[in-house]
Amino acid sequence: MNAWENLGQDRVVAQLRGAIARGRLPHALLFSGPPGAPLVDTAQVLAMALSCQTARGEGCGACVACHKIAAGIHPDVVTLVREGAAQIVPIESVRTQVIARLGLPPHEGEVRMFIVEEATAMAPPAANALLKTLEEPPPRTMFVLCTTAPEQLLPTIRSRCQRVRFGGGPAVGAGGGDASAVARAERVAALGDELAADTHDPTLPSRIAEGKGDAAPVLVAAARSLHVRARDAAVANDPGSARRASARAQTILSWHTAVAVHNANPVLAIDALIAQLAELPPARSP
Image (cartoon, rainbow, N blue to C red; front, side, top):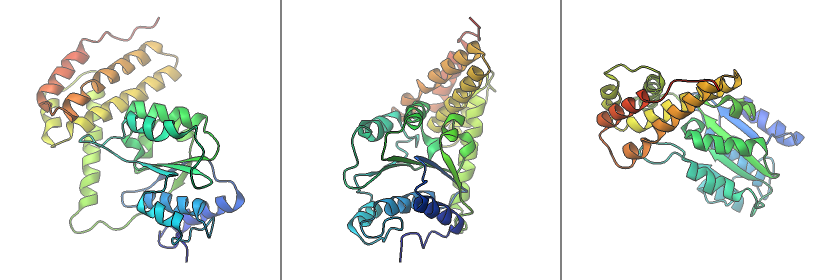
């Protein structure tokens, strides 16, 4: 009996077990797959395999280390989860749970593992902070980024991780919860792209406010879209456009606390934000 047996992802399991056996497991993995695929569960089983006291490489599921990982209390396995009404991974989580621990050796195991429950939920500053760590990872440290939408991650983050693709997860139940979550995520992403655009339909604030609690995630999605635009402009040697996209992203994020924490009226907040965006200067090259 080992911890791999109940995942139902034979190809992924074979890939990961083979990498462990050969000593070729990379320092950063990107687990991607459809909603319902056992991305985080597999990351935890991988942590068991690397930390198990009786069956290293397999994970017995029964020793003290495996029990701690399953219970979420192992000091060397840190999971970054979405927080607050906006359901994002804030930069404070990266600073306190990741960066603050990088200079320390693992407490009980051979490796310290950081698992990101949904990598696209990282706010742009959090993604940038993590990127710097992925570029120069310390020894005995491993990252597993999980996501159902890898194309929404920064290209620079994707390029520093080895991709592990999962097959379909469990079927959606009669309640349609997974389908509803996917539909909401798609709606938030589309509205975020609209907000990130240079011009805005007058109905945008009211459409954003239609979904209860969606305003803050839309702000994050818009900032993420602009962040990608700024990176692409910088690569294309267009510093003016890069600066403008970055300034627009910062302006959008400046409204996040008001909406997510202080419960500002979303229609009024988005209206004011759009007016503020319109006052920003156009892109100019030096």
